[in-house]
Image (cartoon, helix red, strand yellow):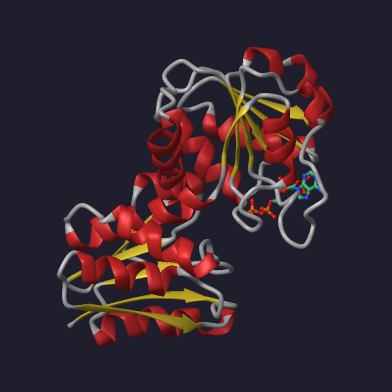
Length: 275
Ligand code: ATR
């Protein structure tokens, strides 16, 4: 039996075990994926446990994605730029860290909406950890100009500076969105505004949205945020955050096994668990 798991704190509500165990079953791989409650002061021991017990792969979730990097042997370029790891591959005792969140998001966006990002201008709301991964993946996908707007403008400028190594990127304050929103094809919320229990909050004034926008939100609890609901009422196309969770797991599965992830089965079991 090949061993896999996820480290987090809290971890009880993680859907990763049902999703990945379903994936292994569908792909006929004899493997078990378990959830481990790892507190911050136990993280180093837990990573040593990966080697000691011969775990083939581990997902890392909140609050360990940054701290875990110091315990790994190799960090993939994407994870290094983003500054966070969510997937560890154990190659015969050598632990390699990847970040599949941003690329998982972009794969979900493309599969679920059909959008071609090449040359498209993009507005990213927020400049936290989630924004970093997604902005990097959007840049690698050939997006035109990436505008990053954040409540704390300084963080937007910092992130824009990092991402501008990959494509033209401009940082803004939230109050400057109206200057750029008409030239973007795609608006993405990465902030926690709208996330349970703050379901009434909006990340930007929705009056600025137009019918031609594709509007997306990383939040998947609730499945459709107030932001998406109001965007849809204005005639915009919308895209929710559940696919990001599914495809970050799909990439992890593929890095670990070298086989294509059974995405439909993974999605089905996750949707069933949220119903
Ligand atoms: P994550 O890793 O999920 O991105 P984070 O690093 O704490 O979490 O970042 C949260 C993001 O949501 C930040 O961009 C934050 O803005 P600030 O940098 O100004 O704090 C943004 N955010 C949180 N609540 C918000 C709100 N009510 N309105 C607008 N932005 C909000």
